[in-house]
Length: 478
Image (cartoon, rainbow, N blue to C red; front, side):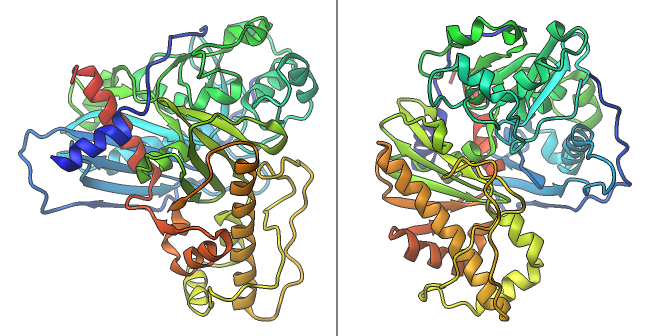
């Protein structure tokens, strides 16, 4: 009972429902290669319960793959699994929308039938500022999705001319810049389109009600979670009619489509709830509830989130705040992270070489590990070049230098948040794949000068399942 009470404080009461606001050149389709998904799922055994217990499904759509987690009312994991997206195509652009859709339904299929039949609610997260433009009548995707790190510098002067100085949208990678860039291509019937974020779109495939978002995803399109509305400077623009309605994360949107309940065996009364971003979901999974507690998500990219009593937003440094009840989740996301490690080392090499690193000794190598030019946080510079030289002969020293350099970038991030007025970080929990590397955790603890440990639950999909549970509780009036 104590566990459940703690659960409700840290997860169910984080979000208050905002006022509902908002409004309701086709590229050719790119054929996907033959399915080469990596899939893996586990069903937890030995858990107490009855055949009539209710379960809650959360899914995480990150930068390199997707995961699902099914929990019970006490937050105990009943099943979990993952799939990688289809590989990039060499000479053609990647068909991301088709890939995400295929992965979504593959994950649903991966959940054991006996578990599916008990799922009461579903939620999911997606990468922040990943944007899709659709036909409002049919939901047809009108252009290739704008990915989370894709910059639209062509739209930045216009956005800066209408938005307050240093607003979150004043960055080339913001959702609003992507919307303005698309709008200025003057495609036919652009007024009848609708904007959705990756999580919104995937959830729409499940519930069928076009034009619904959450206030975490909508932050970078200009939504103000403090006033619970789109600001007047945005509503006065001709493209404002494309903006989605906004609800609190974990709010029931409607029932799962009948066709999906029949196909996969979900209950007829299974509901679909608004989602959030991947880094917010990772924060929720870690259950950090006090100001000064922080979560670093070490996935393909590095995202830091710090629970603060003060809101901090400064686009010059890629810093922005998400609302969490009466507190603010302040942070940003860097383009450095696990993706560059996977580019340079295999999983086996990472594990083996890490064992040979002495985490108590500082590396003299000064890198800025990026896959390509461009950084968002703690430096907002679209032209920042990767720095991975000199490369020592020893692979152990090379890996040590990269891990330590990423830790320094993380440290600069927390230092910047403090300088801008956020609550000072006191403890850092770690989520994402990088949380499995104990040597890296020790390196980061030395570099940050703070207690650093692995979160009990490290997957964003677990945080998404908490939103599904929250939505079910609210929907039933409990």
